[in-house]
Image (cartoon, rainbow, N blue to C red; front, side):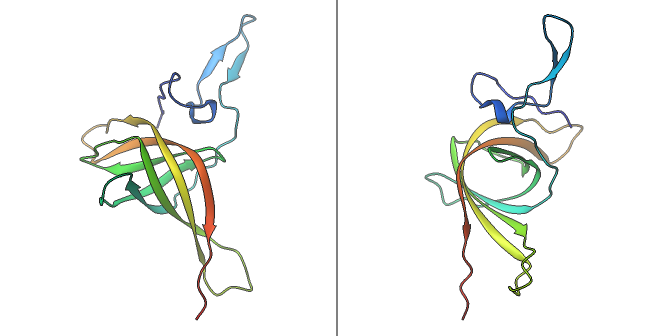
Length: 135
């Protein structure tokens, strides 16, 4: 799946992994941060809305993420996201940690071939782990 990001809006880290020729004909990657392919479930909460949007990440870096969102998706600028990421802490019984993120929508990619999900690219403005409460 190729991701097209409007370079005028997003940061360099939310750019697609496009190759471009420099003046010498060498191919360069435009991303400044590496991305990893992870399929973490999550929930998006649009700013100033009570809507709850279930999602699954497709890739993630330290400053951005790309995920699938169900249609119809009415984009707004800012979201709070909670991602469920695997925990590998043998001292804790929970296999999941919740990562809370402040997100800024950079681009929505339309669905392809009748799919019911659109692609959405977000810049991560802030994030922290939610500490589980032990009773």
